[in-house]
Length: 503
Ligand code: AHR
Image 1: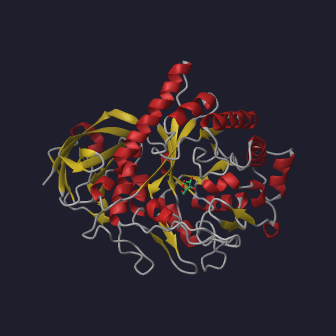
Image 2 (image 1 turned 135 degrees about the vertical axis):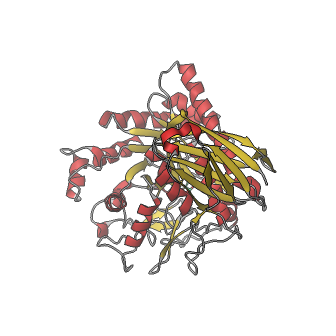
Image 3 (image 1 turned 90 degrees about the vertical axis):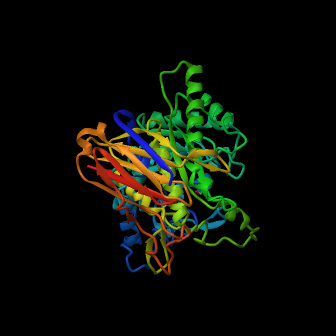
């Protein structure tokens, strides 16, 4: 049986666990908004048409800031289409996802939904088909208290108080050839810089995100970040990262090690941002908004793409409705471990996405809403990761992976708030349980209470929750945890994700 020893010291901190690390993402895409969060004829719908059963699950998920309304969608979106009387709103072609956008949900309705789930709004502006003027008019609409055309328009539309949106994305994936308005790094950087300066002239205190690469595998990765930051360094706070992972060719052990790729991705972007910082002799440090991350079977999705005819523009079609397995949830939990281990520079992260579309929550029209397997590591990490992220020294067996070579068989992250310490673990071995020991001696007061462990694993790593069996997979208690002479010992099942709480 593989063995791993973990060491923690409360003095060795990475950084504070910022709540924005547990953000989400709602895009107008497929059945995410329409027939997902918004289904006026559903028995649980409120007076605005939002499903209360979905709201309850989103609350339970523990998602903080939510990025909206895209994604690729935002690069063709007119925000004005989504405000004003609902019955007078235009129906538009959504070129990103080849659908009809009815605009029945826009800024006001989405904000009403956010108030109910208790999350903050993070808005993306359209720098694809639009530009600085539309971005500053949107900011005037959302954040200026009153006395101007746009702010008075907001009031006339029923919202007296400003929306007071704090975090803004300057476009989406502008490096991607698929993106409406795609451009090169220097052109995008100049546009982002102009737009950021103009936005700050309205509200100096907003947090601004420049688009990084849409993936580490993009041919322009690295150069894109450098060139964009050379144009925008003084104007923005964050550079974005996007990453999606999937099991390819049956290579489960590499898939379970996806956190290694994410770790290298983050390190590269930090190094690039710090290179620009050094070259500019700047005191300012750019942080990362990892505003799209998840497991996504993108290869299957790309293979299913077809050529549409001119009259094929469906409303809320079923798109990107991945059904996640236990193995997916373990890889997903591993990605959360990597995010926590970079809490010093990853200030914000958005799980992409929330409902129906590559989502932890699924719904059926006029039917139930349920938790996918990935729901569980997200909700438990969001709930337990508090205070400071701690460095975890990992000493023990490794495992061979086709993609990453030899990697530690267990990966881990830890947090402490002084009273409670939480340790998050994945066992990447697909065929052997791993024994983990953790010396708690240095944790002092936070190691004197009880120890509990919950996680996700199954004899069938491909088990899923489906409409037919919505509760096939759930959190399980790991009762192998013992605590003797200041040492915690736990056996992690093969292909598992576990959260241990001490105190
Ligand atoms: O999350 C799905 C899509 O993935 C988003 O719209 C886009 O930004 C990314 O390519």
